[in-house]
Amino acid sequence: MVIHRFRERRFSDAETRDRRDVPQNCRWSTDRIPDASRPDWLTLLSRQHGVVSLRQLRAHGHSPDDVLANLTAGRWQRVLPRIYAAFTGEPSRSALLSAALLYGGPHAVLSHHTAAEEWRLLPIADRPVEITVPYSSSAVSQPPSVVVHRSRALRHTTLDTTPPRTRGPDTILDLAVSQRTAREATMLVVDLVSRSSLPLQAVQDCFVLRPPYRHRAAIRRGLELIGNGLMSALEVEYLENVEEQHGLPRGDRQTPFAVDGKTLWEDVTYDGHGAAVTIRLDGRTTHATGGVAFRDRRRDNAAELAGRARLVYGWQDVHTSPCAVAAEVRRILLREGWDPTGSRDTTCHHCRPGRS
Image (cartoon, rainbow, N blue to C red):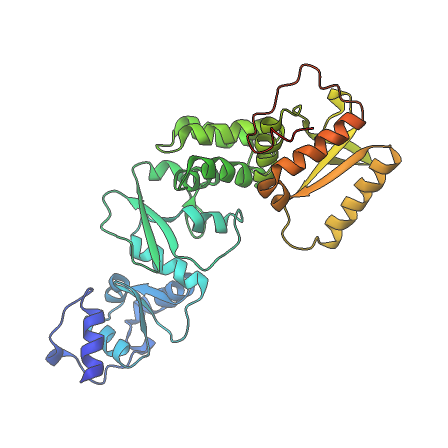
């Protein structure tokens, strides 16, 4: 009796039935499906990774009593309201995505973090599946499994992929709008646009056609920074907290250098200010792969042979010790020939008294 009461409560949001009407021996099998629907049923299970909706079950000849009996016996499992997995065990990521889309309705699409993961803009992480539905949809968020967003422009922002998801530019703007602060929105735009294969112009066009309702100025700034050659949040930190806050000249971004017949790019150079100085900004938090390490060694060797001074900084250096970084860069720039005459005075209140 305890098991039947528990299963009935879980099923009640889909279909409320009197317990006296529940059959006790209603084991599911494909033999119970009408002959005409059986091939379509197997195709449906394969396409949806074993996940089906109550509406689909009814269309293939299953009554609510059938569903409840199979849930009670543990042959099936409830994934979301009115959405069931016709298997035991932990649902795969693909099954969870299918379940979220079925729950959202025929016009639901993957969006925000989940769409970014599908576009390989972000690594796959253990977080809720995010979907966007039309305003007319009755779907609501189902913590901790699904987060539901709403959009009036859904038909203009969706790409017909498998599974369906928001277009790349719209995905980036959706994520930027959802950031807590304007600065986080700027950093996210710089990072995601620069690491994607999307043309900057495509994201700019999306910004114009679909102006964000939050962080609009911050998102515009992020796009402008990318247009000026910045390629990561670390480069933005270096520009704002090291160069601008300490009266250093603004270096050239993404400067090309020929190394062994190939063109490699340096993050910041100051040749335009009379100093052959290269700054490399390494945002990696793990050890370099063999290919990246080899590329860096080639750049180091080329810089050494060309007599160029070079400094390398990581996120921790720039983010937590910008004053120390600025002092080192200033020292090397002066040594290599930079003339600070007419340069701006520092606005950094942390290091102004001790500036050399």
